[in-house]
Image 1 (cartoon, rainbow, N blue to C red):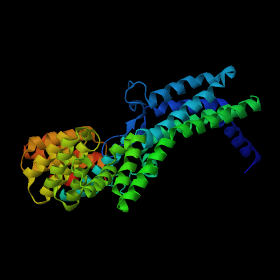
Image 2 (cartoon, rainbow, N blue to C red; image 1 turned 90 degrees about the horizontal axis):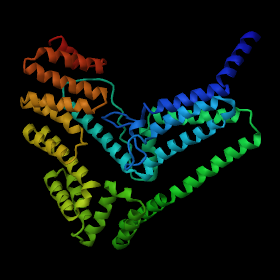
Image 3 (cartoon, one colour; image 1 turned 180 degrees about the vertical axis):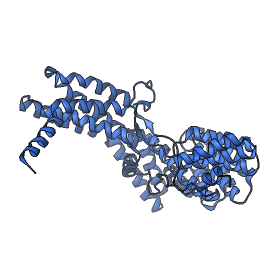
Image 4 (cartoon, rainbow, N blue to C red; image 1 turned 45 degrees about the vertical axis):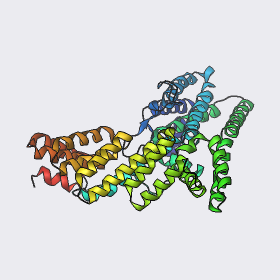
Amino acid sequence: MTKAVINKVITILGKLFHVKTLIILGALFLMASAFLGWIDEPVMRWIRGNKIQIKDNLPLVISYGSLCFLAGLFSFIALFRRFTWVSVITGIVGLMLSLNFFLTFCLFDSKRIIAINDLNQQEASILTFNKYLPPNFGISPTFEDSIAVDTILDRFYATFHFATFGWYLAILGSILQLVAFLKFRTIRNIKKFSFFLFLIFIMFYLSVALPPYIAAEYHRNKGDYYLATGMYNKAIEQYELAKRLDYNIAYANNFHTNVGKAYFFMGRTDKADYYLYRADIFIGEGNFPMALFFLKNAQLIEPSISKTVGNSLISWAYVSFGLLEYKKGMFASAIESWKKALETDPSQVQAYYYLSRAYYDISAYEESIMAGLQFLKLSGDEIMEANVSSNIADSYYRTKNYGLARVYYLNSLRLNMEGNQRAFMSVLGR
């Protein structure tokens, strides 16, 4: 390599890592993050940064993405020499928003990551159901069966797993803003003070935010220990302490099952968790009518449980019961179960997927089309959309609407070109 080439590379790198270049890139990354996905919803679509509120009671405009967009826009002021210090402010704001987003999903409002993992389980259920459909050998979706949301570490991993490009871009943009400030020719002591102050602020934030959730997990684990050793009264005491420290625990199915197990051995039939535990046993045995009976009794005893785990558990029981009936060829019974699942919990998107095929199996083609279109409206997974597009096309074909049938077969091919024999053969008229 000649000296001229080396000098040219150094010049290019110098321009690339120039303060103004870093500020511009950081600003653009922060602004772009607002319009990209920050968190993945399996089966459905990424949630964009400008759609995720910092708190539920705030207006939608006050979202993570919107604030990052404003921070990026504001950071352009740092291009003027006198205001280069602005980059350190926007960098800190971007990093704090990103950190708060992560901790909100895994700790402060962990019902969000629990709901997303529920969609992850729906994706798994759909993949299992696919073997009852005509072949479509595309690339598998992103389901990962090792994901759990029971412990803090589980929720940390789950949040990392489901976090998408927008969140990472916000972090990168913030870091570039901070690097730009550190590269600028300011007094070294000011740089050190700014960096030190930022670290102190982060440590203070974490020391205030984390202890209640760590303590809640400690009491929950202690409750599990007492439950395993048969000390049921002490187990309940620990579970109650955990719930007072972290209200999000009420959204965890396993927590209610363990509490219910303690109440079961104490003979406390006046407690909703007792019935949830009994329902869990019947679900494990595949006895869904009895499971539904106990789940509904739990709601009668404690109506508020519907908002935490009650409706979700009932809906899943209906979905599972429907799948069992479908495998037996009892399509009408399966359809009724899946309709009840959606009435109980509209977030059970998987039910639309199953209905699109079950309606076809009983020659209810119009209903099959409507269920399929509803799934397409909600879904963001191309393989699943390809399968449902073929379902819709099959129904249009049966109603002799060949034009629309061809449109949806072609849509299926567009969504999944690899191994989509079902749509390919249909387009050819075979």
